[in-house]
Structures are given as structure tokens and as C-alpha cells.
Length: 366
Image 1: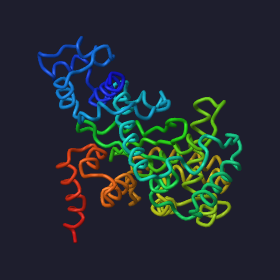
Image 2 (image 1 turned 90 degrees about the vertical axis):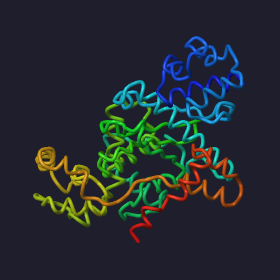
Image 3 (image 1 turned 30 degrees about the vertical axis):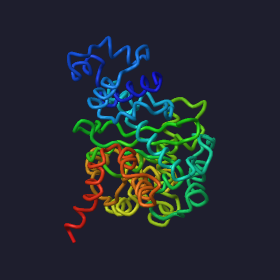
């Protein structure tokens, strides 16, 4: 039990953002930092009272600490997680890992395939070849996702249907992550693509959609040999080409333009769920506008329109697949209410109340 308990205790403590001393303070005078260190490094086995006390303070059921070591999170982009600090990075890693572990356990119970429909980090594109980026984005839409050139509804829904797992980070201790942090992606156990998205409501929805596809680029493209900036630039271009397909831009704006009205851009944004800056970059990429006119527009954008990106698109990006699978397993009696509650990281009473209130707000308007 020692190795599992040690791993789980460290993980649960990180999820709460507690140091060993802070945990000892919460547990009371029967505990000290030295005792907890021995328990966490595996040199001492907890007794039943210690296990119960620790599970209560760390807000995890006792069986959480008995489970075998779960998924192994891949590398997190240091430059991205640096924006939220080491303590929050550690919490984010463990909270995300815990969510993914519960997600994969649920898929195992239902006998579902966990791998994405494509080989991860396999496609190589020359970052200087704009034509190749556009062609690969078109192939994604038409041959892999089968969505054609129409606007994408929920990008999370599309990604999860393709086997990519997405976790939207809500409030942690009553606060959202800083808006400067958009999200990250990683490969888990060498075969599972996982995207973590900052759910802060202050982040424009169009930026969240772009982030999802940017991180998809990190999972889909082979970026080996590229430095950080060229890799990020390529993923940006790839995300934009998927969000704003060439055919749609040509149909809406035409082949060559020397002037564009802001209302044209806003109308396209409202339909495709993409930022004004991404539309402008797409028009520049396909040659509809010149580099000088693109530069002019970006100066105007930064002065007058960047702050307004929070409005203008009424879509939604949320992840419902996990709860849908959970309800499927529960209703078919594959799992019990207590197991469903544990998989949803809740006590049984809390979970049943959660289900009862799931559509209360929606029904109150009918």
C-alpha cells in the first residue's frame, strides 16, 4: 500500500495547494511535518485513523488513497505554466491528472476506445509553407472531421469525438486562473491526447476556441526540431486555417480587396466564432489583402477592437461527454450510485443533488 498511498497523498496535497506544514496544521497536534513526510515518502504506513484524518482534510475518499498509480502526465509547456506560478502549476497538473484518470476509468468500464482516431504528433509541415498549412487544415476538416467548410459549433465536441480529452478548468478555491494563461496540451501514457483549457469567463470565447485548436496543433503536428517561437507560430497558423477555412474567406470577402469594413469582419466573426485578428490574418495568408493593409488593420485592431473581442459571438464551449458517459454507465446499472459519485469526485448525496439541479435554471425559464 505504501507506494500507492505515497503517490496519492502527494497528489491530493498538491490538489489542495498545501505544504506538509500547512497540512499538519490542519490535521492538528497529533500530526507534524516529519510524520507526514514519512507517510508521503513511504517510509511509514498510515494506520486507519491517520488514513481517515488525511482523507477528510484533503477532501478525498479513503479508497482514493488505495488505488494503484494512475495516468502519467506528459510534459507541460514550461513557458505556458510559468504564467500561473509553480504552486498553481502543481495544483493544475494534479487536478487535471485526476480528472483524466476518472475519465479513462469510465471509458474502460464502458469498453470504449481511448486513443484518438489519428496518430499523435505525426504530421510534418514546413512552417514557412503557408500553402501546406492551408491544405492540411482543409484535409482535417474534410477527411478526418467530416465537417466540410461550415462554421464549427462546439470545438470541444469535435475534439472529443475524435478521441482528444478536454478538461475545462473552473474555479480553484473560488478563483479562476489568470486570463494570461490560456491552456496547454500534453500526451499521456504515450497515446492519449489531452487538452486543458482555462475556463475563466473573462477570456473571450473566440480566444478559447482558438486556444483549443492551437493545442490540437501541438497534438497533431510533428514539431520536432522546431524552436519554441516557430512551433507556436505554426500552431497559430494551423489553428487559424482550421477555424477560418480558405473557401469561406474567398466566398465572403472575394479574391482581392483594398479596403474592408469593420462590420464585414464582425459578421464573419459572429458566424464562425473567430477573432477579428484571426480573420484578418487569414485574409492576408490567402492573399486577399496585402501585407501593408494587414499591418494597418492590426494597428487599428489593437487600438480599437481587441478589448471588444469578449462580445460578438454567442456560441458555447463546454465539455459534456464525461457526464453523458457517467449517466450512461449509471442508468444501465454498470456502476452504482456510489461509484458514479466517486467518478464525479463527489459524495453520493452531493452527486444526486447535482443531477437533480442540472437543468433547474433552464427549466425555470420555460
